[in-house]
Image 1 (cartoon, rainbow, N blue to C red):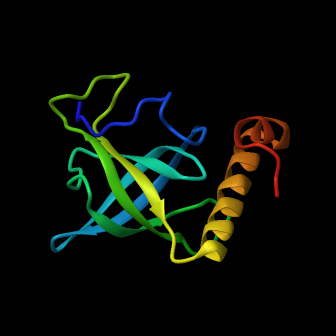
Image 2 (image 1 turned 180 degrees about the horizontal axis):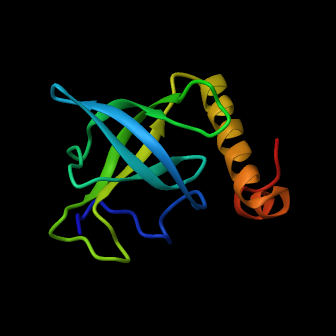
Length: 133
């Protein structure tokens, strides 16, 4: 596993298991992979072709019941290569969301909260993400 990988103890935000389609560009190829969890601060993209640690990129997150995918900026914080992967720790990359300003951060956090509430209900969402602001 890459040294840059964040352990659960070092993560600043609780993660929620969820599967959403993610699309992003990589050197003349458009890739479609899946997230396996999401938090207010980032997501994990399951892929056998992770981008390099430190790469900043724009990706589209397909959300059920939304006409258009949510477009987000992110930075690769750690990777797990195919060779290092296991069933409990699949190949992919940990992504930290990047924001242009506080209003963009607030809007994304609202979207994540809505996703979690739709998947798990309001009570569990509040336990995981804390009270809504």
